[in-house]
Image (tube, rainbow, N blue to C red; front, side, top):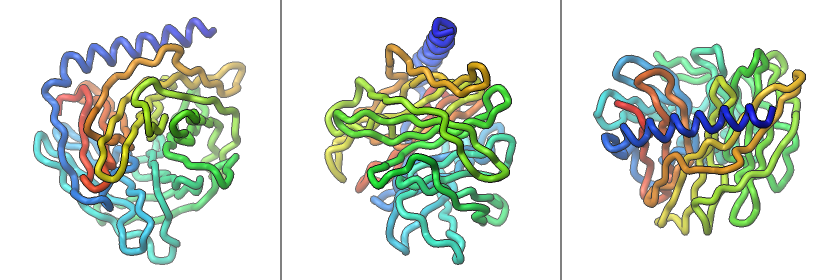
Length: 302
């Protein structure tokens, strides 16, 4: 079985590297908004059409007058359009939203996660540019030291699997957690966890700054480092490993030889999303602190 996992991962890495080498030269970083309050900490695809993409993004803001959720739209090669959403008045403002994922098999449902492990199940009305908070809940195994940066959901062999990560820092490894999510009770049953460190970047590194998992169970992560609000920044995208089922138990296998699929020496990548289809690829978003936010399509053709 381990040899099978390694084969799957190595094939994915090879395909990704070929995709990037053929198409990445045509891409450019696109500015979204300037200023420290507009950093992108997580992003999730809302809608994909022939020449346009809409994303729901989260900001890690903490003050009452700062935005928590926004929509960005990309049309062709134009610069992204940005629209800030109002947080529902009756729901207490979240502090430090760090990740967001779409709920599989739903067109309008998402789960956003704060760094302290509080999750918000929300529903988006894209026409009215309005959100409703359906449920607030806590992730398992949260402590006062938890500093979560990543959360993803995916159906794997019929089981709705959640995966999330404490970012780690410097010599302290990130921790990847995984378990089964119950959509009726909004509860996650922890199945296990593992440590994870990247070879690049180094220094003030956060070994995981975001993640997403595809329908095959392949987990993509971003890692980032910064020396302060004005940088310099460094980032990378990796295939981190594989989620699967063994005797109906959720299992995790880290990639034994990490290879950066993409590196940046100028941006702090804190968000990643997977865009399906022939026109798709990997899209990343940045929280460049005082320098604002940017997006970049890795290997796409838009």
